Image (cartoon, rainbow, N blue to C red; front, top):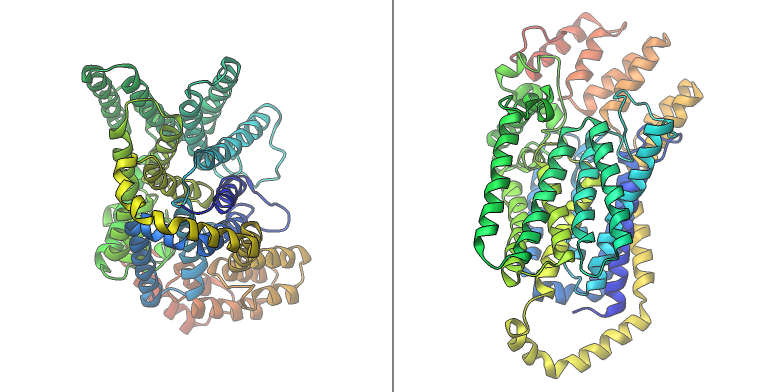
Length: 570
């Protein structure tokens, strides 16, 4: 066990920091107010916590969670293997595409989060994580309530017409509110909770459910229903000694789950509540992701390069529904995204990491029938996130909770093991405990865990800042309406990594401004940056200064990238 001060620092950085990642939105200075800002914040949180782990908890993590450490190393190796063998641009593999930013750097930071969370042992630490989730949820409930009642005070470009929360998308806020609402119920069932607090929480829960409905996000309804089902199971299990009540409850929930699944397939009475056309489209997106991993089994296609491969590897029926011109840059299923990114090595490592949390849930559940609010809340939130992750796009503000609570569940199982289970090992260490404790205390006086977390946070911010910095520079260039500033914003550098979106945006802007030579220049740079970006070739084909040779080459490459589409110009 690491010393109390170091653990408290990790818990606070992760709990408060993850809430900050979920909440932070910056408008006015960037074109993407959500994803680059959340990646930037995640960098500070993840590396800050991990720095304390490196200073005070490496031995403890290895001694208590060898399987997790090994799997994280394998995941990292598979990730590097994917990046090295990817045809996509290196900066795209590192930082991701515009509007997603879920590439290697993001996954590296999430690995730091789960490893740091796996070190926690004290009840107060787990409470800190849970209160972080509840705090972020409360902020979003208040904000969404205000937006519904009085209008949104954040100047979003909102094409959806629904609430966006601090996630920039009605589906994401719906899912997050579902996780929050279910976790709130689980935590408020804790024995000793005052009736006033429970009543207040009940009102907040009802408001959150109303906002989920208002978001029109099916995944939010599914997530909150599943979460309540889990809470109900543990509540029933704690109240009844026999298995009949538990089996009966599981059967009832299973029947409800079957009806929900049928509703998603447009069968039965729940169809109007669950089915949307987008449900059908997801099947094609999943299939394309599966095709990418299957055809590149050892390496995948690279991080956040799904969009470059979608047209090539979608099934032919996808040309009918959703149609040849409806494309996506994500599988709308995180496991299939991972499979597409890194093939079987990355996919298996990812599933194995998830299995450690599942094993922790099973072990802890088997130990006691008493309702444990901390454990049930961690379990509910984690399962709800995993459910969301198999029906939706990865998003940093949501993903941080899945990895955080995954590590917390592993830690909680270790922290609550019966004494006899670890007694022999503890007895063997008794002779060194005092000496080690003195060393740790001395180390803490020399290197404050808070100071280390602060230094780590600065390093993390420097690691994660490039996409934010580049987007801020691009936003400033657009506002200036100055061609020279636009060109300066396109010059690649560490704090200004290139991406296809910015090049295409620049070409279209320059073309509309009748700066045809510059538009042509950056159209060529765009295809040189990423020859597998379909839209770059299409823009080259359409611009004014495109030569006959350019058009022929562009057409050949569009057909290469979209081989089953008879009309690539749409």
